[in-house]
Structures are given as structure tokens and as C-alpha cells.
Image (cartoon, rainbow, N blue to C red; front, side, top):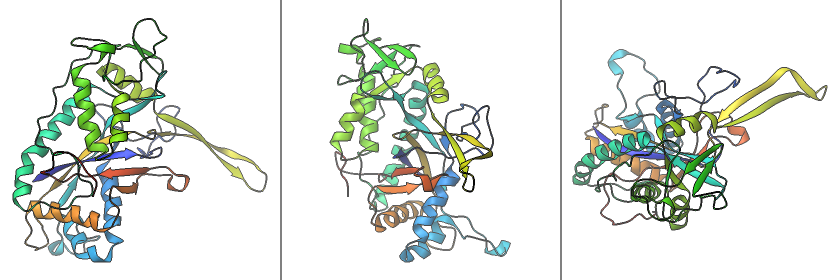
Length: 341
């Protein structure tokens, strides 16, 4: 199968729930069992993308090939879709910063997993290119470069970029203050202001993927990018999400209904997640290889005229939750840099 990395960039608070209460939070977000980091299940993304294709009458035949039939009348007529959607994993968590308003933080554990997925996509790229390539939703930087090395980070340390704006200058020394954490903006191989080569390299790679062709947002991400320790990142992923209180008003009395107070957890706006889409050959009798089904998927999304696709994922849609940018670069791109279609 061919694999393709996608990114989700939250434009508003994002709530994809777990279906059960957790402590004081009545509606927590879905989290991976082993890491306890927030995720967006692949099933949620698949359903939303299927609806995008279903809304376009020109894509009805492609819809069944890529996503499979909506229902199965008999076992003999059953077949699976050509695409498999993995869960979206947390890549960048926006966190309140004493300087620079917000910081986009990640950690070595997350970057190591992300790097492995980048390598898998790189290995698949020549096969997809040989099959003729495809028009993508967003043209981004090519994937033929080896991912940067993942730098080690000590606890209470933050690796930042040369252009950083998240250092609290009025504090003694060079500190990055995130929520209740005071982190040293220094470390091995650190340059001015604690800048480390790994931070700049990773900020550039991620920014090119998430904001292809948008130099302004790429620069902004670099100015507020930080790599912190796994322990500090895990702590912030638990405590720095957004929890909102909700109530239901009794219209006849103008007061809150009995028991109608609950708390919802959300991933904050500007959160970035990544995941993989795997493409195999068509299973509905169409003579399409894996590279062709992946090409049909990208072409179908581009044909809807959305460019960098805006989707609504998860619950609370009527109050603005779950608006995301879905960024899917082509598997191989001969261009040296990113550009929007």
C-alpha cells in the first residue's frame, strides 16, 4: 500500500469525544490509550471526507471505489474501500506563553513518530510518481528529504528557533514561560537565545507542510515554535487543553434546568495533528492500482474547488466547534518549494 501524510490544522476549538466522562470533565476529547495524547479517530475523518465526495455528483463512482458501499445487501456483493484512514496524532499543541502570546510546542517522542511516518511516505513517493502523479489538494514541499534529527531535550528545557519571540526577557536568564512551567531556553549546541539547530529544522519542515506557500504563517510558526521534554509535553497535553462549562436554559423559567451543567474538553484553535492515509488497489472491479486510487482521491478533493479543504469534524458543529484545514500534499512533487494550487 502507498501511504500519504495529512495534517489537520484546527481553526476553532475541536471536540472529538471519547463517549465517556473522565473525572470532573463530562465530555473529554478522545485520547490514545497508551500515550494519553489527544487524537482524532480515523473513522471521524473518513466519514467527513466521504460526505465531501457524496456531495459532488461527479464523484459518485469514485466514492464507492475509495470508501466502499454505504451498506451491504449480501456477503457476495461486499467489498472494502481502497483507502484506509489512520488516527490523527497530536503534533503541535498551542500553549499560553508569557511572551509572544502563544507557543506551538512538541516533544522528541512525537517528532520521532512523525519522522518515521515521513520516511514511509518518502519510500512510497517514487512509486506514486511513476504512476503519473496527481493533482493535490495543496502543493507542499517535496518529501524526498530525510527528516531532521530529533534533538534530545531535558526536563524544564525548551529548544527554540533563532527568530523566537517566546522568551520572557524580563525574567532572570533566558526563560520560556508556558502556562505554569518555567523552562530554560538553552541546551547543548544552543546558539543565541537558546536556539538549537534541531528546532529551526523542524519548524521549517512542519511549517512547509501545514502552511504550504504561506510565508507569513510559516514565519509566525517558527517564531513561536518550541521543542520541550516528553514529560513536560505530556503534562501540558493533560492540563493545557480547553475546558468550557455549558448550561441549558429552561425557556419558560429563564433559569438553568436542573442538572443541566456540564463541562466539555476541546483541543484549542491552532492545534496541529497529523495522520496517514493508506491507499491500496480498487476492490470493486475497477482496474486501478494503489497509486491510481490515491491520485483519484486527491483529484476528487481538488475537483470540489476547495483548495486547502476546510472541514467540520467532531461534535458541537452549530456552535463553531471542529473547523479544521485538511492539508494533503501530493506524494511526490518536483517543485523545490511549496505553492498553493
